[in-house]
Image 1 (spheres, rainbow, N blue to C red):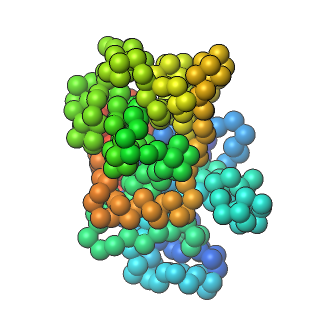
Image 2: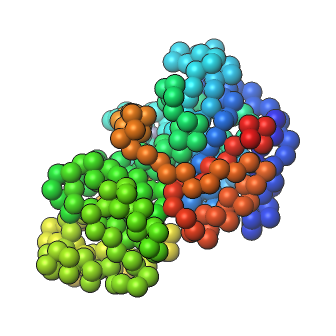
Amino acid sequence: MKAVQFGEHGDRDVIEYGEFPDPDPAADEVLVDVKAGALNHLDVWTRKGLPGVDLEMPHIPGSDAAGVVEAVGEDVTRFEPGDRVTVTAGVSCGECEFCRDGDPTLCYRFNILGEHQRGVHAEQAAVPEENLVPVPEGVDWEVAGSASLVFGTAWRMLQTRADVEAGEKVLVLGASGGVGHAAVQIADHAGCEVFATASSEEKLRYAEECGADHVIDYESDDFADEVAEITGRRGVDVVVDHVGKETYPDSLKSLARGGRVVTCGATTGPNPGAGLDRIFWNQLSVIGSTMATPGEVDDVLELVWDGTFEPRIREVLPMSEAARAHELLEDRQGFGKVVVKPDSEF
Ligand SMILES: [Zn+2]
C-alpha cells in the first residue's frame, strides 16, 4: 500500500508518500480502507519531533481518518467488512486505576494514534476495534474524517471539564483553528454567550457563522481589554485557551470572578507566569483537558452526523501533497480542517 511517511524528524521535506508494507490486523484490530483524514497541529509537532516521544521509523502520521472496513480480526465483534467507520485516536491500557474507573484519557499509558504510534494517513490502516466509531450513510468522507479529534477535544473541554451552563459567557481563543471552531459551535449549542478571537476580517465573519456573538481581532485589539469593554468590566466565565504562553496572562485577565480557563494545549509555549495573584484574589480555576473518552466522542459525533455541528473543510489534497497540507497548517491561513485523501481516491 501507499502511505504518508517520514524516516526522520525535520522540516516539511522529510514527508513522503510511497510504498509501505500492508498492515496485518491483529485479533482485536480492524483493517480500514482509508477514504479521507484530516490533519491536526499535532501532526506538525510529531513531524518535528516531540521530547520524550521515540517513534518507530519510518512513521506514518495522522490521527483522524474515515473509511470502509475491509477485514476484521477474529476477536472483533462490533464491525464487519463494508461498515463505514471513523477513527478516534486515544489509546489507553484498559487496566490501570483510571481506565477501570471509566476515564481512559487519564490512563498512565495514554497515547495517541499518529503521535506516539503509527497513524492512519495511508491507503489502509489496522486500527483497534475500540478506536473506531460507526459513520452513518450520507455523511461525506471529508466530514467523517475531520470531526473526531477536534470536536471530541472541544466537547470534553467545555462539557466535562469546564462544565459550561446556558447563559454563561465563553471566550474561545483562535476560533479559526480546528479545536477553536468546534468550541465556538459547542458553546453556542450549549446556550452560552460566545466571544471569539481570530486574526482577520474573514476569519471573524466565519466565527460569527459558527455561532460567535462577539468577535475580537487579536491582531489589532488587546482581547482582554475588548472583553472588559463588551462585558462592562465583568469578564467571561470560561476561556478556552489552546494558545499558551502568548495568551495565558490575558486569558486570566479576561475572566470574571470565579471564572475558569480550560486548556488543551500550548502552541506558543508551555510556561507562562502562573498568575497566582489573580488566581487567588479572583478565585479562578485553571483546568487541563486532553482528548476525550469514547463516550464523549460518541456524544459529540452524534451531533456532527445529524448536522448540528459542522467541521469546516478548508482544503482537500491528495496524500502525495501532505507536505503542502503541513504548510497550510503552519501558515495558519484559512479556516477549519485540511484533509488528505489517498491519491487513488482523488
Ligand atoms: Zn490505563
